[in-house]
Image 1 (cartoon, rainbow, N blue to C red):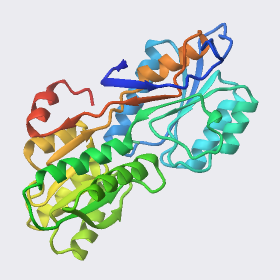
Image 2 (tube, protein in one colour):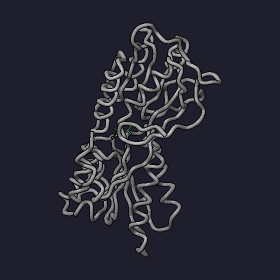
Image 3 (spheres, rainbow, N blue to C red):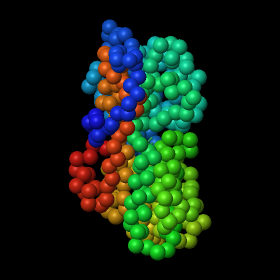
Image 4 (cartoon, rainbow, N blue to C red):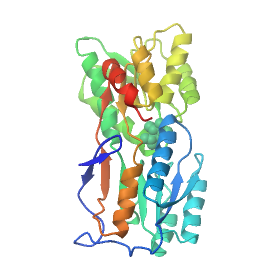
Amino acid sequence: MIMGAAGFFSTVSGCSGDDDGRSLQDAPTGPLILGFSQVGSESGWRLANTRSIQKAAEYHRIDLRFDNAEGSQERQIAAIQSFIDARVNVIAFSPVVEAGWDDVLRRARDAGIPVVLTDRLIETADPALYVSSIGADFVAEGNQAALYLSTEYSGTNRPVSVVEILGAAGSTPAKQRAEGFADTVGAGNRLKVVDREQGDWTKASGEKAMRKLLRRNRDIDAVFAHNDEMGLGAAAVLEDAGHEPGRTPKIVTVDATKAGLRALIDGRLTYVVECSPIIGQLLMRAVIDLFHGGKIPKRVASEIVVFDRTSAAAALPDRSY
Ligand code: GYE
């Protein structure tokens, strides 16, 4: 178990590197040069993730070449190629979507540059294209959201109508939170996801999605929004429509940003599942170990933390994001 800056992360077996876990790469003489391609600036979570990576690189005196793709896969691929051309020592990135990375990652491998995935995953037939992935268990986050609602309605003997606002299409958190939520809903006989609408992680997309869901559905007992921003957008629309968001309907979100926890304390959200963005130290640890003989776990996953109104009030003063 590794203690990250904002919680515990556990490693999964299958260390990269040769048998005794010796260094995969010969250590460079000067500072390590890390090329990092970030998804964008779409949410409070993402801004905290960027700050965590930049602060950790500075702390460890790693030369960080940082590119913000502002949501474009094409720009992420171009940034990774530029890191290859600049012959950085190591590349890391959070893939905006799962598909379409094999070609550029093969070029990184051909150039002898190891790649670390952060936050999200890629679809590939060749998992050797990256040495490690550091991020949250998004399926478990979806499980946890549905488990909360299932428990809340355990005394109800009627079907409970849930609507879902999805994160950006094709991204690991959107796919896996939906998968985890559906698995737990399907395991019971009370909750029913009666409708879904596509969002893109922003508050505006949550507002737009909730307006459409309200037009299509008369009775909504609960909303599951894949992140705080979309949940807050949904709450604003519900409030304008005369509902009491957080109570009728209940609203469950993921991330646990300060804005999310404040809304939880105010009663406008009902339950929040944490997904820690503070992975900078873990990334730099992996980068340093890659060149200085440490063992590189193939997977480092964060533990699940959940918040209700009481625990949010206790946690908020010390929140770093
Ligand atoms: O939930 C959302 C951000 O990849 C886990 O992306 C991250 C997600 C997070 O925009 O707020």
